[in-house]
Length: 245
Length: 245
Image 1 (cartoon, each protein chain N blue to C red):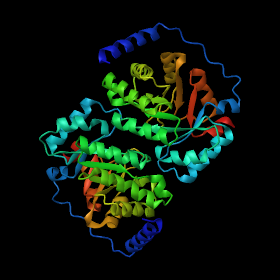
Image 2 (cartoon, helix red, strand yellow):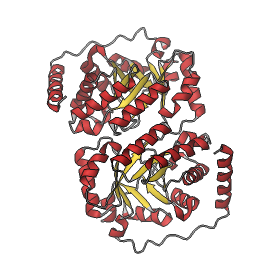
Image 3 (tube, chains in turn cyan, brown):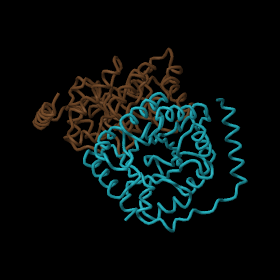
């Protein structure tokens, strides 16, 4: 599809959002620790994470019933072993955290990780190309990962701290068009993480049919609830045990 | 090869370094701007870099005769186009900047980038596995990239700010054993970049037969010369024009 097609779509979306009333806040009053745990991708993406760190991550995820463990590719086989028989999913990152890999390589990485046992793929979109308004490139980059991931759900990381408001909207529109299941605010490796404002904008853009994951810098129960109030349906955190305790 | 084999090799190297006299400082008195330029990989690895940024990077590299441009994978085809007919090499990063991808994916990424036109591959080793002393894993991870890169030169990034002194030595020994051409201090994306101490230790470990690349936080001519004095044979920098001017 052409740049013109996507440009029109994004323009239309920006106009729609401008005339849209602020949606009501989500009610989080019944979210106790157990219910909150189901929102959380329990995350360790540190390059220096050891085998023992990843085993501990899996143990905590089983104990607290987090939605998933979110790990770097090289740890997926260990997580499969550790999480056998549990309901905790494995979420692996692709093109992470810069998003500037080739589309071919992102797709190959996603395919390999799903074959290894990942059920969710958190991919970083190509940020520079989004800034270039090279919408066809960004769309096809996401589409190739969605296709390669088959039944696994794909979350598109926008890295909102690097984007203008209209670029956030564009990223959401392109992710939705490409059939991704979630948009996600941040990698946690750039200058800032999730903000209420970005989460709310992303939720208004994608509507109710897609997930919104807030990640980066969420370290307390209050912060997690504030993100859910703003529209997040998933939280990425490493301080997950603190958040639900 | 077994963990035992590598452990012995690393122990022997640590003992050798302890009894080794401090090598003489490298003479840098004749390194004017032109000569210094030949040491520099002119680098833009920002995820938000645009097409115009990469074109400017290539223009500067041609004008100042830097050794290479160092870019994210998605920009290699543009650099091939921009650098046609010049002597500036294309250096692309693999498994960057976390190094925690699968070995299979690192090898596939390297192979693709060399086919696209990269002549140098800067790969990040698997830092967590190095900390785990899973030496066979780290060795084979590097070896697969070296094999996949064929004639292209491979630099192994250690991310020294995350490593103990003995882990830096181990990373150098494993890189050398696997047939890499350079060891490199840092990605520039973690908490600190190159230090004189790390560069000197790396040079003493690998000897004269391998390159040592200092990268991360080198922004002045003085800083670049200090790294070369300590043993660096290549400098990674984005402030390259300032360094040689």
